[in-house]
Every structure is written in structure tokens, then in C-alpha cells.
Length: 245
Image (cartoon, rainbow, N blue to C red; front, side, top):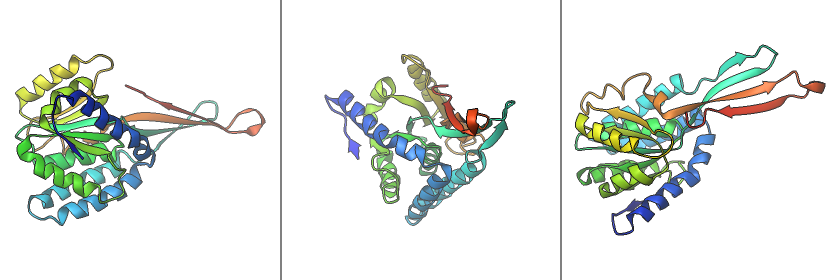
């Protein structure tokens, strides 16, 4: 779904963001492996378009493979009093996926794949000249079992409003260095908790997107504790998240 800029843009940004967040918990709750399986089908559909989308599909599959290695494992941390602690990952929430004229089908596919497989929702804002490519990737995404409206595109004129008003937990951008600096300054002016900024300045070689730790920028850590020493032998479960950290 695409919303165009208008006099009521602020309301549109808030509406689309709320739609994304309404289905985010469902997506975040299914776990990394199931998200990998769903997004793998997305990669197959994207590849069927041919041309530049073949490379985009390869980037999606690369991000999914990395997720299996970096995000999926649950780390066991036995406690001193007998309890079992499990450290695992979860999505942060709503990410802005954006870029300037240096963005490409490959980079956008990589940003979307990383944010979605990590368990996030996404608002996509790209230059109008690139809107057809973005729409193709998003339309293929809704053909698989991804919650409706999890990832949506807004007109490029909405970028400032998204940065200033949307309940963002992170921003993934592929752009020239000066554009990234200006964007980071705008993010720093927001009230509340700092927004995670995932900035790729090399739109050709994409060294950040290809790095093994890239997806760690899209997640938060949670700890699940099972107390097996409770009175009467009953196990109690305590689950803690790192929240906004």
C-alpha cells in the first residue's frame, strides 16, 4: 500500500506506522526459523522476475543464511542456583528502510531481508525514480505468508515526517556520506530513546550489508529463565527483554 504526500501527511505517516505495528508482534513471535522459511519463498518469487532481481534474490538468500548462523541459535547460560537461562534475539519494532539515488534493488532487498528476518516491521521510503523497483519487491513480499501491511512504502516527500514522528526503533539507509550525516542529525533531534542507525555509504560494494554482524543491528536480546528449584518442584518462567537498549 502506497500513500502520497498531502496536507494531511502527518496523519498518513501515523496511520501507516500503526498498521505496521499492529501486525509486528505476530511476525516477531514466530521465530527466526519460520521467518527464514517464509522469506525464502519471497526470494524465489523475486528471482523469477529476472534481470536485476536475480541479484536482489541472491542478497535476500545471503541475509537469510546469515540469520540462521547469527540470529537463530539460542544460547544456554546455566545459573548458579540451578536455573536455566536462555539468551535469544527478538526484533526491535519499526524500521525505516531508505536511501538516496545510490540505492539499488540489491541493497534495498538486503535491507528489507535483514530487518524482516530479524523480526521487525518496515516503512520503505525511496526516491521516486526507484519506486517501481521498491513496489515490485514489496508486492512479491505480500505473495508469501507475511502479515499484511508489515512492510509498506511511503512517498519520498514523507521522509522528514517519518524521521520526526514515526515510532521508529531503527533506520537502515544506503546513501552518500553527506546524506547519512544529515539524516543522523535529524534522528539525534528526536525526543526519547536514540534510534538505531544502520548506515551504508558504499552503494556499490555494500561492505556493511555483507558483513557477518550486519543483522545484529536489527535485533534486541532477551533472556528466558526457567527456575527448576522452586518450592515443591514447580518450574517458574521469567522472561526479560533488553527493551529499548
